[in-house]
Length: 454
Figure 1 (cartoon, rainbow, N blue to C red):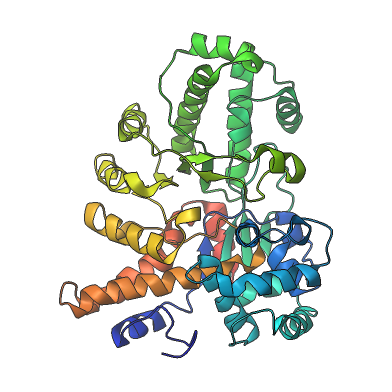
Figure 2: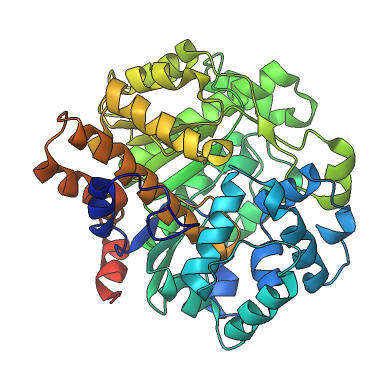
């Protein structure tokens, strides 16, 4: 097999045939961290160094692991210099997902088929940057066939940059993480967004609900929550109000109690508004405090947290009547409990297991998730891949996922364990159809999607 040819990750003729049925499908990205302002203003890309290395903490981590000086990662070096350093370490990344993502991007976006390394860094930089010089954000999104880009947004955001942008529906996602134990600045911003002061718990929950309604009017069909642990204890409203009143002096257990009350309240609101809740958990943030102080958040210093005790997931889901619970997608960063979570999803209506997330977004991690979901839950209801990325080049991950999914399915077909005539429909649904159906539940989102002509 030739280096990174059209058959990469596709290990049989059956896999190649199945892949051809999905490789050109549009992308519905249910969870990204793209900047909606950059999309709305249709920014230009000055060079490949900026496109690849301005926001991509996956690449930053890889560079740090290879001993690259921070000046060439988040420091003041030019993007050409940063690109040279990244190219230099690429041959060290054997089997790393960053290697796959980068080579797929080079081939599919720029027609470059040779492996990136120090020797060809300048030539690749010049070729890619020349091609990018006439391109804007909308061109990149159109080239990847991104039909929906769901961004991650604070409830107080104005959403002025969302809407139909070129051939992509840019849709907000409701992310209320700052309000689990909010500081005064967060409450001030939330209050400004609803035109009244927010001074107590009831006022904050009312304001969040009002903002949720506004988000839904702009096409929002997903909320998103990131946390380390599920609630350990469920408390009364009066207890929650007392904790909120002294929120700047809470210990860890008390913060978890308040978080549990707020999360549970919002879950019921999601059900009312028809919003699906994405729950991302078992992550520890900013563990390198020294580097966090220098670079800020989302710079590559988060890690896999302890595995969540499945009983706490069960208790959370069971705390709602089936008629109160919204659709839920579970994403665990620590996949040692994936089998338990998959089995739990079968005990509660409208609960699904999400894509292999973040550190699990690897060849092995995706295969392991597909295998577990297939055997302990249902693969056919999956909403497929998401980017979880701040980089506009992150959409190569969809092709990476689709290839692995097709190879996984082809193995079952070739062993006579799954009917080939059903495989194409299954792959369509997982790669596109299920996410399309989910997004289209929101009338505003459905209208934008229909207007997108890819």
